[in-house]
Length: 280
Image (cartoon, rainbow, N blue to C red; front, top):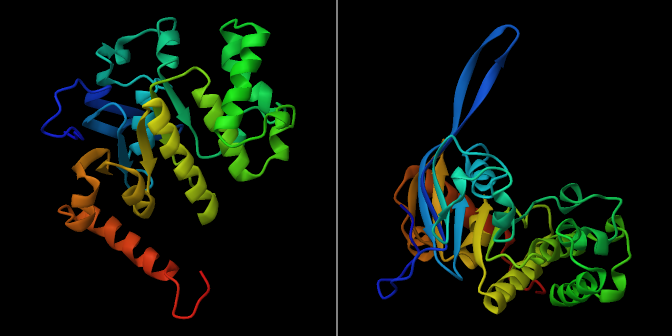
């Protein structure tokens, strides 16, 4: 079980996951239908204002966990408790309240939003669905755009007119518009150049402090995780194989899968390190 709670703290976790499992069917006309386990017996806790990173190679099950925790998919087994409420057991209508507490920021901001929308339409859509009046929507929109580093007068620009980093800022504003307490960052930095990654990471850290946000970071990039997450859980073949405080795992990985990921991250950092005389 993963916990990023210090020994001096006694608070209840904002997000508690127990024995989470999810299988998918696979087969076809000429093959027998079989059940494939994408996640099995996953446990972790995240406390208010902290960040837990789920890391692993492609196919390890980390994005399946993200979709189940956000209830984009229903888990086959297990509990997902947000402030004590088991959202895994909720039906579709009951999930409306959950959507205000937990939101996702996806890897590809363009595909996660209607490309025909303006920035204002993309950010305001969740409020419009909930029947919020125009004046209040606009007031919240302008405040959020400023907070994520976008100029309010860009509100009527098409999503496609923004750069990749700007689109991710729009996606972050959209995720925050319902004032959630938990954000799931599903490979939210992938595809951005290093400078933009750093800017978005700094923005999210600032927002976390300002709003006491709790983050579940889904990533394969340990270099980023080492700077961003308080704790990490390493996934391999649908299970968590190692977990604990990020600095401890980076310094002394115990599981072979973790060692492989840490070694790859250190090798990547060496390649990016400036050589003598290089302008930084």
